[in-house]
Image (cartoon, rainbow, N blue to C red; front, side):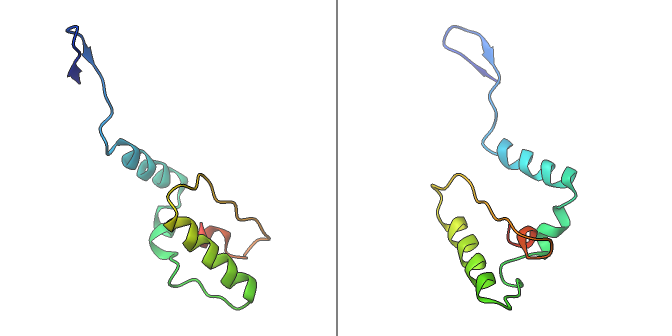
Length: 83
């Protein structure tokens, strides 16, 4: 809470609230443990398309101006691991 110029108290989210909300959503989704286990370093690439997908995921993380990342494919292709 902080006091405005006209004397009113106003609620303001702290800088860490977005991070805290994200952590809570991960816990509720059941993916919290997967986040620790599934890393870029232990993603196994057996085919060229997997190497490309891994590189695109790494590039997305580095580029802060991107708004979203879509990775679609069949079951077991590594979507959850990379995302």
